[in-house]
Amino acid sequence: MLCTFDLSELSTAYSPTEFLVREACQDWERREAHALRRAVFCFEQGIFAGDDRDTVDDAAQLLVAMSCSGGMPDQVVGTVRIHRSTQANSPSVWWGSRLAVHPSFRSQGHLGCTLIRLAVGLANAQGCTQFLAHVQAQNVALFRKQHWHERAELLVRGRPHSEMQADLSAYPPCFDALSGYVTRARQPATDNQGSRL
Image 1 (spheres, rainbow, N blue to C red):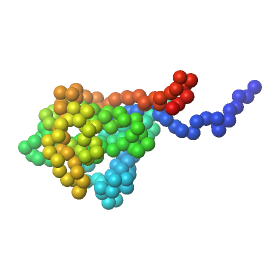
Image 2 (cartoon, rainbow, N blue to C red):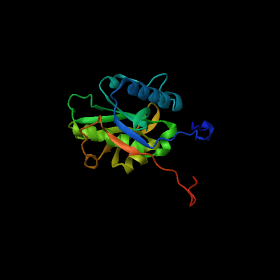
Image 3 (tube, one colour):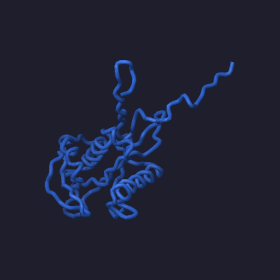
Image 4 (spheres, rainbow, N blue to C red):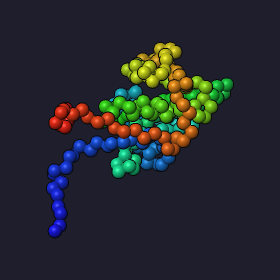
């Protein structure tokens, strides 16, 4: 007997169960990361007109958070870049920038933190002695919880930011950025009968 099922009975809301956070290593990962940055920083926030890329991208290492389907990465849902200081006398000073998470995945909460963890850990493995970032005012509390402290307040493109520094002792070196980290998705709260709240 042939078994059939009605597709309308399946949930239409896709919710990944895990995410892979690693250094981008394939062209599609880089393309989607840049598209996500453009969507967040150009269209959603209006910080840049048209494109947010700059000369830093030429030397930066691009990190991505990807949702997984069947254990395989299928969509870039978060990104950040890291790079050495451009000042000749500061080769061990690193910067992180362009941290972005897709709006549909911000409720996962831990994606931004995992990107930060990989960013600082990867730089730490490459001889970083100081890791800095210009953090938008609305994200300062998140960075404080991740062992960062404020050094100065400033305006970047007319918006309030804090220059913040990571406590490197809270970030063990990550020597395998291509494997990165696998993190599980948050499960929705349920009532006693197993229904989602």
